[in-house]
Amino acid sequence: MRLSLDRASLIQVLVIVMVGFTISFFVDPRVRVLPLMTSIAAALFKLVLRGRRKAIGGYEVNEDLIYLVTHMYAVSTGRPPNRRLFMLDTWAGGYGGYDSILRRIAILAVDWGYGFAKAIRIVVSELRNKIFRDFLLRLGELLNIGEEPTRFLDIERRALLTEYQAHYTRLLEASKLLLGVYTSGVSSAIFIMITFLIFIFLFSIPPSMVIMVYIAILISLSILAYILYKVLPRDRVTHKFKVKIPEKIRYRSLLIFSLASSVAVGFVALNMFKDPYLAISIAAVPLVAPGLYAKKVEKKIREIESFFSIFVRSFGLTYSMIPHTPTALASTLRSDYGPLTKYLRRSLARLNAGIDPKVAWYYFIGETWSEVVRRNVNILYDSINVGGDLAKVGTVLSETTFRLLDIRKQRVQVAKAFESTIYIVHTLFSAIMSFVLSLLLVFNNIIMKLQSVNEELASVLPFKPMMLDVAVSFTPIFIIALSVLNAFVIKVAQGGMYETLWVPLAILLAAGGIVMYLVSLMSTSLFSSITGLAGLMEVVPG
Image (cartoon, rainbow, N blue to C red; front, side):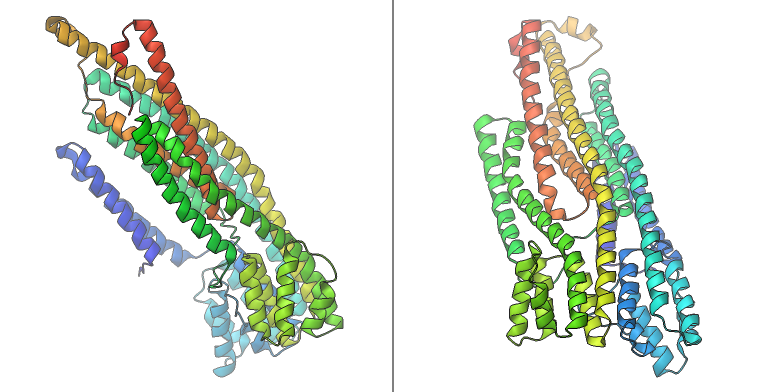
């Protein structure tokens, strides 16, 4: 089986191997080779699985396929030559490789003289996507008998939408189970950590094993997070056009300023209060700013998308009566389309100024920063050029967009419930961990006091003083890493713009840091009052 690696896969493989290489330094020399061998085996398994997945192909419908068939339907309303159905003008972005397959069919059918039915049979023999393959075979037979493909493509589009809706619902049901497993994993990590810290105290296990447990917990949760990332649909909100977008520039500037402020404030707080947990919670505050701004932008984009489904229907009906883009657009703009209106007015101004319509629509897509707008305008512009029936095209685009946006709304409720649960579990994790560390510090100091007072008595005790410095030093790093991982999983569950990840990250860092600081203070006060030995609490986390 031939394997080819892209940059992302290569980075993932290298990270897996480096993690195993790093872990091998913290284990017993006699078993040092095991983590490295395990990581290499995991990397090879990933490569084989990736190659196997490419060989098998996908069986589920996705948004690229839905919009491809919608694009073909829109072009077919202009009754062009059959070649034009396969040579789509994807000037604003393609369809994930589907469009290149269509072009290959067109070249074989027309340039090489095979005809569409035979060309499709030749090409589909190499395809592994069952839904796409069957669609092409049905289309080939239809074209072979000389039927008009418009009605057929509309039926296929509706069937794909229904199948996608069912598939999306199944994914959400599976995600509920996986999100529950992840939450249980975080909860289980609490007891694993507590048990291991107590074992270290009771059996004098080397403190370096604490690092191993921290790494093992993070790796286990990372695997669950990766599975969730691969299972759940992306639900992309923004496109990747290289257009100057003011919101993107403001976000990047705000992000750089917030990161710099967070680092600076964190160092100042650490030097001032001498407590790493309090410093973490204070340093997390500036990170809220870019996250909130990204949420504001995401909300605006979603409003634009909801209004666009109304606009494209109105524009299509108007254009079918007035087949002139600037005039039809001006007539459509007599109604209000919320935040979409100002971008439409800019496009109208460009068209009236004599700018190429493709350039005007390109900047319209870029300024809205919406992936849904990009997909729809891509089809709309090609339909205008081919002389399609814009009344039908506008209605179909509106219906398709509305149904896809409606499907995504099912995800919100699941994500909100999971987000609240993670906040609670993360806070409890931080509180329990801080309390256990404080308790172990008390016992450790008691043993050290007894050992310094009476060596014979200390030798009778089954417990020996242990070095808790490693656990105390690495716990803040572990809390930061766990917060990043939990924030990432929350964002995966939500979907949409990943730039909004800074909000849950800031909340988790602030909550975890302040809870550990307060629990440490309360446990210090509690144990000091119970034992009456305030000096035993001189060593606290941090």
